[in-house]
Length: 124
Length: 218
Image 1 (cartoon, each protein chain N blue to C red):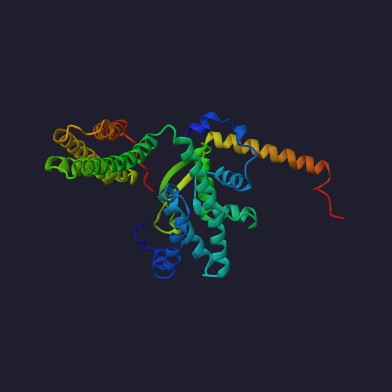
Image 2 (image 1 turned 90 degrees about the vertical axis):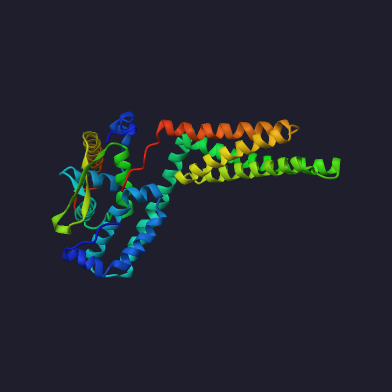
């Protein structure tokens, strides 16, 4: 779903991404996911530091869909969760570019922090 | 919202956390209607998954749920309000709303004008003749019909549009009959009584030709 916003905005204009938004994009890099799978993976990866409730998750997905960063991948049941049909989401090419740019931005930030010896050293 | 499930998970859902799900559906009302119709079913499914994974109906679980709603719903409401504000200048909806409010005001004007004409006739002649009285009553009815059309239009439903169309047409016919019976009808009443229903019928017809997009099913 390429929206007007997506065609008008450059990938750079989406930066910096909100932490929850970047976590969602990071999850979708591996492939299509439904809401609960996204929520679970984010909670596991961040060791519970980022917990996405239904409102936060679908609010973010709505914005990502409108921005053209994420696309809908259809509806189907997840055998592990029963026979209810679930809507799947996948990363768009534009979304992948935005995620890469955000990852580079964060990488540069971490490198700067390392140079300043904020991280990568044993605490005194 | 969704078909009953026959899996063990579905049976558990049906038997135990049905009350929790009902409560969550009530909480969903905090979200904008469009968002709810688009994502409400998915959000309820996610809530169900979370509920079953947490394993208990604890205070901590509900605090998390309430915090999620309190954090996300107002932001989504503001977003929708802003996007409506952006679109309002270029959508037919604003034309319809303006026409409806104008119709309400002018309908009241037409009804009051008919009553004023009747009172003026009473003051001058002491009594109202049969046709004059009937013309005054018809003028008031035409005003009330326009008022009805405006209110029906503000409801923004298909039945509201039908009511508005019928009321506008009836008002136009009644004003024309009143004008034939009482040729001294004021110019303002004639312009409002004849012109407004015609404009309103045109406004009601034009957006149908442009074909407003149907809301997406959840």
